[in-house]
Image (cartoon, rainbow, N blue to C red; front, side):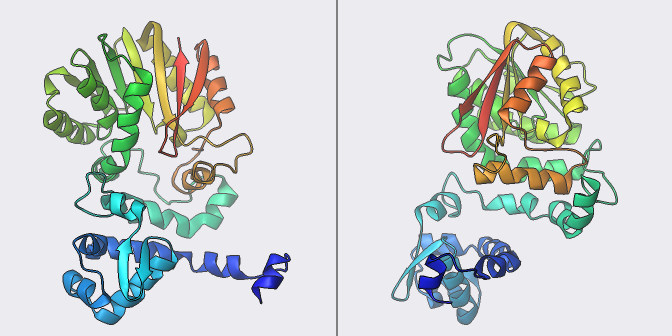
Length: 341
């Protein structure tokens, strides 16, 4: 089919073909990360032969992989020389402080990917079709892998969140970090303000990762932990902030509201709950990355979802909060909802 016919709106199977073969894109980026291909190019290896030697791979295989990465926007090519795009230079070169290649250890792990081999059943059921819904059980090793693998991806939004919520960083805040994982969100506040104190809640094995990061950040003297389920742990009270980062999407509305009532009780008067989520617009199809997160939740959780701001606002109001406001968190694809007691 000619480009002219496509431009005139003639039907084309191109999208179908690309989608059926999309798994090749996933495996290609995974292979490139595992080989250290982007780092080799950053170090000055620019031809297929040079990159192949640096990565311990065949020249033919490397040439085909690099060309495929050019087609998909991860590399550029001039004559026979390859180069990194700005995004690849920031996120896929191991020398970059924002390197994110390690996220494949979680995002592409069997615990996540295998769920989508049963997507037809999940659609029929309305939730994950996994035979054993063990991911939400105490001490599941998946969440330790999540805490370690996803920390690079969460570093940027964590650094952006703290000044958005507490621009002055000049008053002592008592902060509760629910489902803290790697702990980077709470630690971002503590690093900006030497008066802040953080209490992190998560499973015991996951909190070991958070404590390691607190030690590395030099704030372990102001970092406490409460081990156990966020639904069962006694939070205590008097908190200025409660952080709910990438947590509510795992659950249905009634479950979220039961948690939020507990959060409301833990906040002092005038306190705020700070939610970071993939929040689609009311049409539920834009922006694409946030809207598509609903599919992830369909595949891996019994009843989770990517909630709109209106849905989140209603949850918080039903749980006793006075009002909520939404903020963008550029350059990330997530949004922030601040809810006031």
